[in-house]
Amino acid sequence: MALILDIYARVSRLGDDRQRSTGGQVEDCEARIVERGAQVGEVHIDSGRSAWNPRVKRPDWERLMSRLEAGVTGGVVVFDMARFSRRPIEGERLILAAERGLVVLDSEGEYDLTTANGRKTFRDQLNAAAYESDRLSTRVKRGKRVKATRGEPNHSWRPFGFEQDGVTVRESEAVVLREMVARVLAGENQDHIVVDLNQRRVTTSTGGQWSRESLKQLVLRARYVGQVVHNGVVVGHLPGEPILDSETWDRLNTLFASRRRGRPLSDVYLCSGLVYCAHCGHRLTGRPRTSHSPYPDGEVRRQYWCQPRAVRGGCGRITVDQRELDRHVGALVVRILADPRHAKAVEAAAKATEGKRRPLRAELTECEHLAEELSGRLGRREITLKRYDVAMAPLDKRIAELRAELDGLDSVSTAGTDATVEAASREEWTARWNAATVAERRNLIRQALTNRRIVIAPAVRSAGRPKFDPKRIVIEEERHAQ
Ligand SMILES: [Zn+2]
Figure 1 (tube, helix red, strand yellow):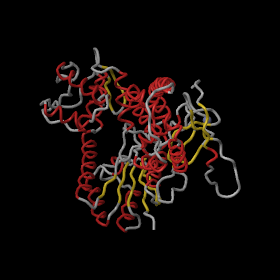
Figure 2: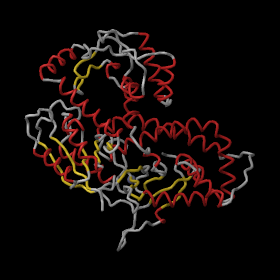
Figure 3: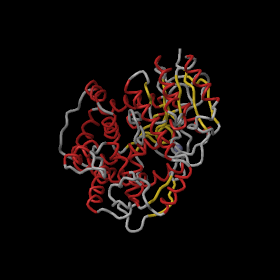
């Protein structure tokens, strides 16, 4: 029997970090439940009653707790922990009920309350929420807002990169900050950066050691682009030149916004950006289809589609199942690569320009990865279309530039080279394909296709259950207009 999970949402209050309609919250939670292959139980919505005032009765919360305690539901998905409870005592009640193995999820993560570690994380979250609400009584809040508007920091501690006043730049730290940001953007492993800072005895503003989390919080602080933010809203600007320019800031935000837990999405969509719409010529990209029934193994169904967008969008008319297409393209690529004529030409050409191509391809892979993650987030409604388009515009531009450069190299490289390459057999190519990572497979697809491309034709409507039709995969000569 499938796991049943309830949903807990609240009408959002003014000043919430994430203003979100209750309907939107519920939709997000439902998507998470479907992703896990569980069933939606009851949906509880509290209409804006204070989560931390002990005198306020919250009937839906009580109802949810009794369902959890009676074992009627296997757990709860909460849109935001701070909405669930700001009183640790309520959290303890949940932990007590959870000894049977309740699942508690919020939009950031999952708490396994049967383990000590899960309980600790959960308690930390609740404590943080309780601390926030204690601190932010209305009067304090008003005072803070006034201070914030004047550019004064609202913390007793000094922000890294600034003097105690929070306005004057401390140049020695600003240098370190710019270095860190440059390294993060260059794709350096953040754990390396953290270790390096600690080894160099560069401390945080409070004299502590760096962690991955403190690094992230640091580089995403709006104060470094001169913005004074209070409750998620820009309420003022700092005088003078900001430590970081706004373009760098946008890139950082795009980078972190695109990161999420678990397997990177781009590892799922083998053919994303490599196959084209037969109607309009756009590249197809991947998206999950939580509204469709999952694959037989319980994973969420996915497809490629010609994604319409406000800027440079596709026609939206072509969709094709991800698993079927990946499987057929894999077989097709092996067939082409194992053909001695192709193998020879392709390997020789690849060798000749590989040196020039490699850095371009690495950057392209990174850009495509980001684009993919962003479109995944849009698909899961984690970001709005507007925000998506803002983040995508510079990325689209760079991807187009890189592709043009790579295309240029490809067309040069097919002209004669003297490298002789042994053609591998179909079995050898199959083995190579099977052992390859998704990134390597994408390169194999490009190799097999040199100067040609895969176009996905529309599905022919037929009676009965729709079945994947391999004839929809068409190879055609590349048009260099793109
Ligand atoms: Zn199209």
